[in-house]
Image (cartoon, rainbow, N blue to C red):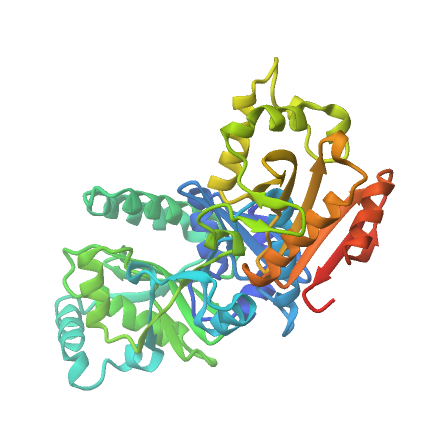
Length: 472
């Protein structure tokens, strides 16, 4: 599937506002300001797929996809179809990140339990009742009340003020004073977070963000920036000068009183990134829950296979190709006439004259990476060709391909090997659908696939496509 991912920019984020405003997963990751603040550090790209916004990020050498954000119920299923097709065509392993709990049933229904799931504690968002922050009522908030009362007593002249894009210079002046404390943590995350705040400031009005500050004697001593998404108010920035004791709880309360209105039920104060001090502080505000963020790694059938299988058909044995067979395999790989319809030309990737060891290393690496299962077709002890299960998908499907040495063509061996490979796929790997394709000029291959029981499944300018299920 042709999905056109492109780098995320401010105009793109602004255009996505209806998606962010509607999103009610209670995750800070699906918000406009979060995307802008962390775009550089996570190399965020995006695309519109089936009416949804799909984000793709690169993090620590892996490609991750965020769960599709939809405007209408049911659009995300088609978007995931698109992600799967996109990854399959490019041989990309699918990893989903920040999947909300509300969508885990969809993941399980789609992939069964053939997936690895993680839910790291340090990335879970802290969710609070908005009314608790407005009141700090009851025994469990006595500490916050005491700090607020002490702050108000010591600084009775304080003011809570709202700010806009016109006040960037004042906000920057405050952040300069705050910087030394933030950077003293000595962590990459602390530095990147502060860089993200500076990145955010010029675009406060563009993103319709809520900004408030505490002011003492005309000087900003605390700053908070939030965003409305669904029924939650997400706090992206909350900074205070700690020499003003009680500034943090006072800032949090005043911000909630002013902005947590008109249907805001929850306040989301994001994750703690594994920072012990931050974790302790966030827990002291009595969250109603920590919001799960699941990473989902669907597994394909080939990832359950530890070694190349051995199975026998009426005349053939299908098994691993070893160094003993390297000369025959070299002849199969090297012959351009044999491989013009194979779909892969090693000459495009290798300069010079290859050796048998080069081709043997190639098929070993293909299986080690679980990209395909290359299996030798043996007539007695002699290697006569190769049958391959490859292009494994995430819906229990794969593709089959076959090629023979020229002197063994015309005897039905290709059909027999394909049938054997499909039976192995259906009954040992529990594959539900086996696919195949052949070049339109390759009429012999087309006839063989039909004879093996495969059904036509469309065509384009280049290929005829086929499919078969165990029930066919």
